Image (cartoon, rainbow, N blue to C red; front, side, top):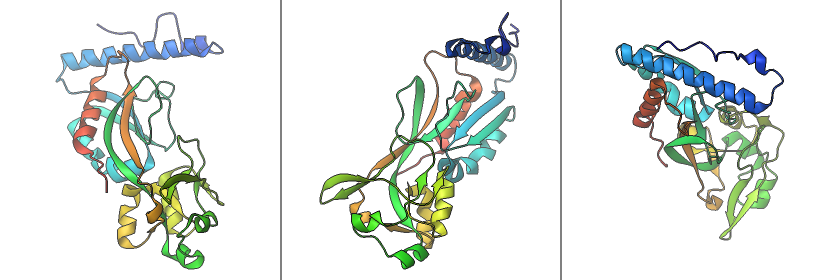
Length: 258
């Protein structure tokens, strides 16, 4: 079977100005045809997955876990071309033609299927030079006057959770810096710009080397952030390239609590 490159009688330009459901229908059809093409190639060839694999990942997970193992994946599957985009923002997989997204934090209710890769606790950190200038906060009142770095995009949870006298409370980050991703925030914290609340695995080495110092640990509620690989499901034919990548992630990435 040789699938057509597009959908007969319909092209992206035909959908210009049309309602979103029409565009969504076209994209679903395009993906189905592409996946059937790949299935045919795999059945008639060596069985090794091939094709273009588009992946998006958060900066912390990519830098700490994904990038160090990518060369092994590409060596295993030389017929796959990996298109990797790093962003801490939530990407619409269908609209952005993305196969897999690796995300931190709570999952929003959707039609996506998720594989858990692990979990990490959160920690508030500051550089020694910042803490020397402004003091080490030990109470929520002292933390309130600190420069608390924030993200520039919408997230599921914005506030910093704290436990005060056994009661859960929250403090909004407020300062003179907004950033687009956790890696940038980490580097700014190391430079002494302000305090940051980040995943522990991202700053573990910095803490060990003395570049960052955990603060307010007596008031850390012990909240955890889960990491998942998510992909489109709901009866869709899963291409071999996607299955191979998901299995590789599951076998090689284990984000364990510290």
